[in-house]
Length: 250
Image (cartoon, rainbow, N blue to C red; front, side, top):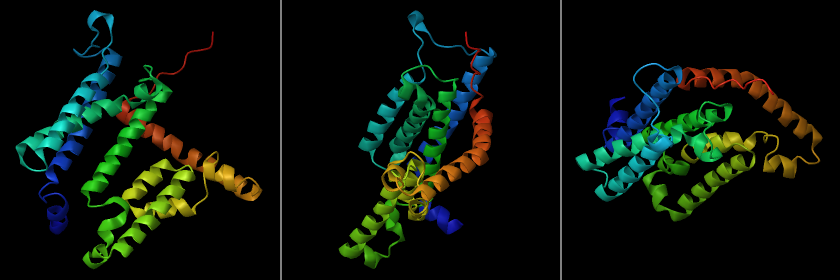
């Protein structure tokens, strides 16, 4: 455990990444707590609407992300400046991704069913950050020995094989598995060998005449949704608050 901490966390240059991730998570949780208090009409917090224009927190988030990002690029990976810029970048990213659904829909869908997308993106981004801090590198290059890394043919072939797994998983309609597979190649391999999801490019292209495979893919997607949707929604409601229920049709 001590060797892992020294190699992946205490190693020079890793501290800003850790600070950015902690700042990202803390900002998201604090922001959700404040917005839930505003929604319930409790506490001193209120929406900011100068001149009648509702200023969403994605606006200061963009400012913090730009300042922290450019500052981090200019300051390098060491020193107090790099740590401060990492905190600013993490806080800005937390504010921006908390309103990811608003950016996608160009509408205030924060407390609607579409707003759940923001929570999914935040959890996904946090998971990727933890994998990077844990020492995982893109396409499994760190799994190679120093001799293999010096051998260009071995290095290139490893990258191509791992990238092919990522691409197949993406074509099979599994973007989360594909992105995680960039850092953990085994995950991409797992997504590449399993059935494609209904509606994906792979299913439309290769399952057109394979009726049994198409039926199995649909059944597996139904079982997966029935098994995990309730758990996922419960977690999202606990962390970020339940969305508004749609009113009765007029």
